[in-house]
Image (cartoon, one colour):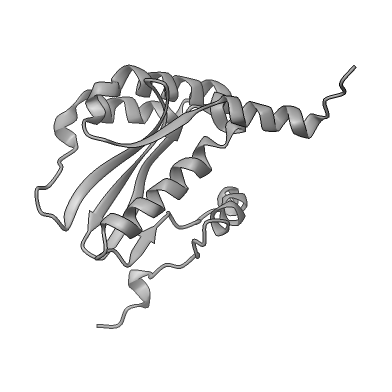
Length: 169
């Protein structure tokens, strides 16, 4: 009998799952998958706070993609076959880019699809958006977000902010 230890079994799960990373040309082609992600998040986290995103995607006129090459929105996603399981929108504004909408189906968290997505986004920005100097990944502004900061540091994000009240004009 072959004894399979826990680590090997977990590793085999990662190897079996084949995720695909890509730039999403039209986010509205994936509305069914987005709704499923939102519903799964609400169920998993036992909240109803993710429903606000449904309204955002129902009216696609709210999301304007500027045609300027320095000011635009770009969507990145992780797919399992043809199914969108995680996505992020990055808003580009000259030398600054910021993570805006970031949703992942929690059923796939154990397969590391979020680190896979973030690493590929950072790589794409470095390789294809040379003018970008800063990638902003939210500011932790409440006690409930303290745990995420350690996770963000793994990707070399630093916590910083400028408060308008600190600026003397």
